[in-house]
Length: 428
Image 1 (tube, helix red, strand yellow):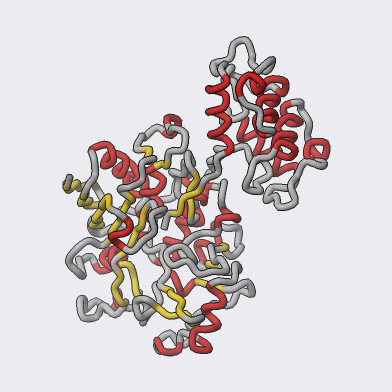
Image 2 (cartoon, one colour):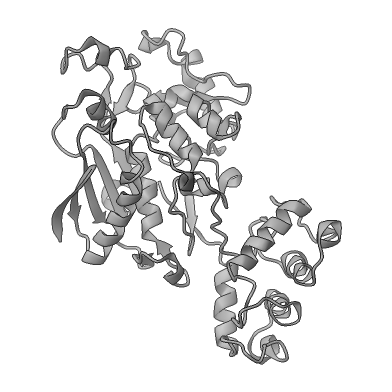
C-alpha cells in the first residue's frame, strides 16, 4: 500500500504500510511536530517511509528499523547567494539535508530528505497508541519510529573502520562528528584547521579508530552538556565497532531506564519510550535544530517493565526476589540491600534500589495476582517461587489473594514471564 500524507512540518510518503501502521507512525511524527520551533521550520520535511526486508538493504534480520538522512556537503554557495546564511555553516562538513533546507528556505535536492525503513518480517509489532495495551513480547512501533526519525534529523555519525583505520563514509565528517570527544575532553577530530579536510585525522585515522571503540566516547556540544548537568554525554562505543549502532547512539548502560532511553541502541520487548529526552534534544540543537521545549519534555519518565531490580541483566531469586520481598515488608536503607545485590549490578545503592522498586510498584508490576495491591506474602512469594523455577500448583498454592484478578497458574506464569523477559532487539 502506497500513500502520501501531509501534516504541518512533514510530508510523508508511505510504502507497504497498513492503515494501523500509518496511524502509529503519524502519532510518532506528531510528537516531534509539536516541539519543532515553528519560527525555524521554513518548509515541511519530506519523509520516505517503508516496510521492507532488511536483507534487501544489507542489514541483519534482527534490525527493527533504520533511519537515514540525505546528507549534503556544507558548501551551499552554489545554491544560494546570501552570505549571512553561508556563514552559518561549518566548512568541509556534511549536514542532513532536512536541516540545510530549513536554513536556506529552499529544497536543495530532489527526493526525500529522510528515509526510514522498518522490518516487515517482525511479527511482534505493537501498533497501538495506548501504551498500556502492549502485549507480551511486543515491540512498540511508535518508540522505534520516533527513534529512527531522530536519526533522520541528523543524530548520526559518518564513520567507518577498516583494518584499524577510521575514515568517513561520505568523504567528510557529519556535523554530529565534530562534537565527539574522548574521556579527557579532547575532540577526536582536528577542528582547529577545519578548512583543510585532509587534516581531520591524526595518525592516518588509527587514533580516531581507537577512540571509536574505547567505551569512553562522549558528545560535548554546548546544549547537550547543559542538559546533562554540565557533564559530557557518554555515547555507545563498544570494543567492536558496530556500523549503524556505534557512535550514533547514547550509551545503553548509562541511559537505559531513563528518559533518554529512546536513543539507546536497543529496545526490550514491551518497552515504551515516547518522550524525547533533554539530552537528545540538546544534541539535535547542537547540530542546528531549534525546539520549543515545554515542561513535559524535561520531566523524568519511567519505562520500568521488568523485575531485574539491581540491573545486572537477569532476575534472580536470591537477589531481585529477596529485594522485592524485603521492600514489600517495609525494609529500607541497608536493611533492604545487605547481601542482596549482585556483583555486576548497575543499581547498587539503597536509594537506587528503593527508587526502582517504588517505580515498579507504582506501575503495578509487583501486584502479581492483580488484586490491586502488592503484598509480601502473596505477590512477593509468587515472585520468589517463580524465580526458583516453581510452576503450576506449586507456584500458586497458598499465595493467591481472595480478590485476585489473576488466579490460575497459567495467568500468573504468563504475567511473571513478561517481567523477566529482558530480550533486546537492535534498532539503528
